[in-house]
Image (cartoon, rainbow, N blue to C red; front, side, top):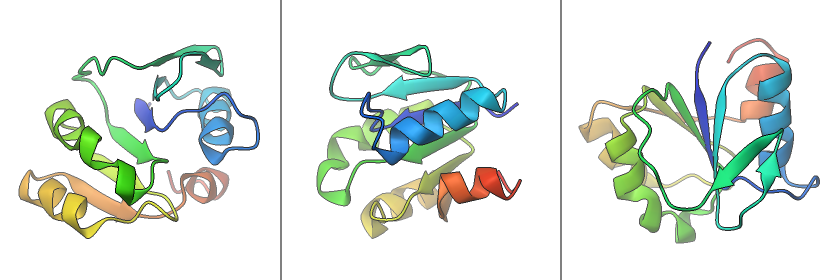
Length: 119
């Protein structure tokens, strides 16, 4: 199963990052939550320190482009196979950095991908 790192994880049940974390866990995907505030989502703690994980298949973004630059190095050092830019997170600068590093950049909705078995 594709281990997924959620950037912008939130304990707020109204946030898409929260919904995706729970959906991934229900479907059996291992996840890592990264966010600004501590807490737990889908039973998994939210990391705020930026521990580099080297076993990540997919990073799914729930942070707007104006707040993504602090995550650039973290994402690149994690070396995922792909990064999903969910609606509202599209960022040409980061997309270019990912492509230069050989990381697939996908503009899509993780929830839709999961619901349609395209994840």
